Length: 103
Image (cartoon, rainbow, N blue to C red; front, side):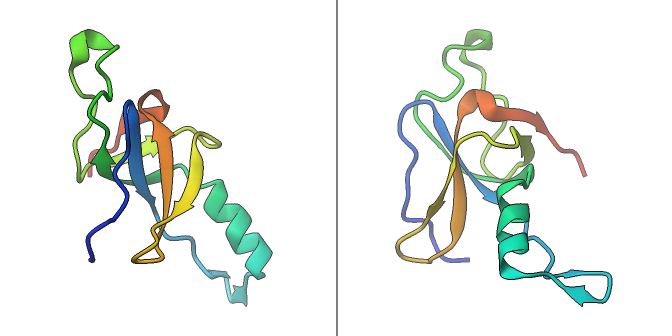
């Protein structure tokens, strides 16, 4: 994987959402449907953490670390495209991370 060229500022975190399937059963999804499902995705991998993330909560102890698989608020933050890799990522507030998912 190429290096991400976006660094979250302040209390924000950057998440790589899980991939959305192009098919449902044996049918291919329309592009609009796939994009809508990608925006509704709530699982992903934490790829970067802003320097002030979680400082205001729980004595500043981080809830998650880079590389953790997390779940996040369904409509939290916004989708941003890395200008170098063209990968779509979610930029969220630290409080939008709801849980760390254990494998």
